[in-house]
Length: 167
Image (tube, rainbow, N blue to C red; front, side):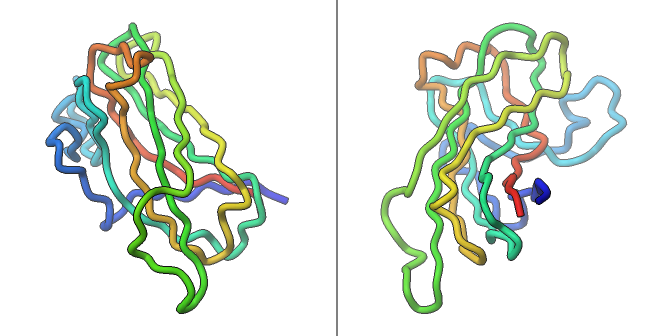
């Protein structure tokens, strides 16, 4: 058995309508202007805001489902609250991809880096039984500024969100 991580952001990842979540090159915020990869910026507001997307559960999935967030900030104090809402849809001509509501909402709180732009990683456990090989997983990944635990007075800069699982 091995543990795998697959990135879940892709061409189909779309910011919500708040205007408080967007993609831009990291060199716009970074000091050194060297690395121009695309990052997700989640603004520091009192709103719940983020991005929608989808991914397929890999063919070798068995269990151990987690969502892993790699992020940083231009702040060294406070906490950030991340939420992950999703619905796994499976089968062939069995379940609708146009359903209301979510199957599960999970969240986690992480502390700001100890130095500006240090790499941070947080793992949130998902319910293994919600996933089956080949499922289409529709999700909303957010920073929840409405949560009292979100006290970081800076943008959260997300380098990637991953689906982690065991085969």
